[in-house]
Image (cartoon, rainbow, N blue to C red; front, side, top):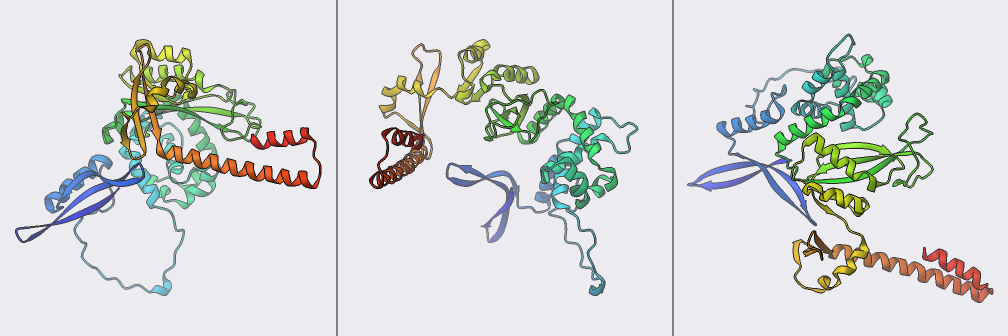
Length: 399
């Protein structure tokens, strides 16, 4: 987000109006969307801008953007005696620390992890973990041995560098696991307050992460379908639920050999138990579809948008040829078609960009096949080849 201004002349006077805007991508274009109108930012406008900032971030210790200019004070400095010692990162961790407090995670952590006899409160160690993940994702060992001492967090949090070590960081992670649900509920409510988020439509998908090693003590670490193309490694599956704007609502970890289609019912029940059975729409890809899942979603009137198997397109061949398509954005057209029994509505989509991409993929494939066939033809002219050998080579090239 950034500030933009517009200059207007009224009755011979010049007026400058300020807006807080953000960039939003719409198809192939990027447009500026106004987040807040700040007015002329005169004395009254500056007060409104300051109130808006404080409603999000609270009182800040640093100067405000619209503070009055500080009087110029000159101080003599001997440049040859000036040197830099222990330069530290400040801007990114200060922003993260401000967001941490804006989300009221400091108060939540103090409530969930009350101070005891430990040298450093667990709430403080958790903030170190989160800010490190925000600014420079890395291992806990790297945080303790390198990142923390190079940041200004020791001054912001009033924690000595020697107090942050890998043992404390790992123990803090263990303490967070049983409090996962309370943290997710808090973030959902607080971010909804700050940004007026809507949860009428949620998207669900599954990804995975693998382990370099046996992971013998992790019962969920199993070999399964590897999205990372590492079938030799054990993995876990991570199911994530997000809002329509991509804001996470919750996640669950499943065994690495668990098929995606078997997770849908469980994740829906978990989210409904946590946030209630609101009239939300569930969105998933065709990997989540089975007859049992569809029957489960239809129970109690759940609404959904899911990808359907490609063979089902044959049922709608006549609809595909009709011209009553509606453009929803540049290059994308849709139309609604009722199912034969009237219980569902199918959304047919066609994308010009997707069509061109598939044409290019087919063209590249055809060129590779033609080049390989010409190479084999040349080899056959130079030396006689057996039919079985040629057939095997053609089959391997076409895969």
